[in-house]
Image (tube, rainbow, N blue to C red):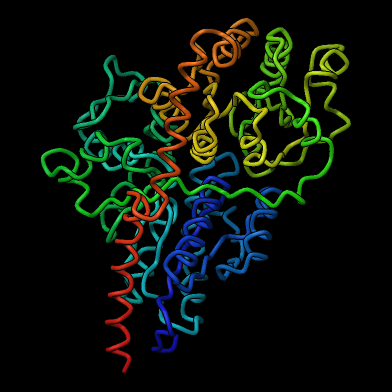
Length: 486
């Protein structure tokens, strides 16, 4: 790397595998470029895990707002077992790509002013240290998840036995306690490498120079205060926390909409359609798909369902193979005659759909979602109530936040990962967010958050100001580098 700084600050971002990490990193990079006039290079791992991920990357490259550099996918077959948890596999991949990242940064024309990594890229902060760069961690999730992550080394010391076997909720200073059944996936088995990786990440994060969150101040003020209060979590989180969200994928131009989807939506009444999607990696068992089909049908509400091939159990089994289903086998997933009976009221789409465009359509009035944070923000910023159907990762916590704290969702009485949600309960939840008395209250709350989210990203809003603070720090760093280079 030449000791040159360029005509403006140059920032490097590193995205982990998965849409939940890729989209927020891309949108952060684009915002630094367009709003703060930075040169931005985004390193991504060429996972080829889904057609949707490839499409998102191609679109970002076409926009030409940031330089996108794909790092070669590494072979981790000798590092983790094939049946290792997805989180463990991602950690192994991100650890193994450090030499390629180091080499790529060395090959840049200009010396970067900072490195920004996401949660799974925390080990790459040592590469930033080698280049004497400030390093930031971007958590593409909410403040409650960050609070748990910061506090997990303490829980690791004081809690005896498995977290899921505890009789009382797990307390976090200044924050809502977490029920044992709602803990994140790595905490389910403390002997698993997945948990050990999570504890390591939680100890890495506070070593950065600042933490960015994909939320805004008004969404979780109490939890943010706990993270900043030295008598609460601030003693563990000793770096500034910057809520810079909601950073979500923008709408595509109208001329990119093709097929029968949007003409069909245009014909439906306002707020009448339920959108069903479990993210880029979520899958349902065949038994659960049948019950969901019946629930949608007997609710008598219109719907769009993004259908993925069933797995042996509900969860994230297709994470690295999303998009591999066969369209001609779709009929076998549903009750006999289902496709004929719902022909006028339902639309089935194989594997992937343009989610932001669907959620922004005025005909869409509800979203059955796995509660991934990207999907959660996309629903809120479009004012769409949710049926929270968490499957994996931190989604159970997200579901609690949506239902109990924000009041913009309902959720099943049984955890989808532990049993089958029945058709009658599905019908009841659909009607609760669409036609029942409670629907108006839920819709009003989510509309209020929609306006709050739009305001915070505008000039003078809290998230706009928070990212401006980060930008000013990076500009100061760049100017210091300029002086040293001369």
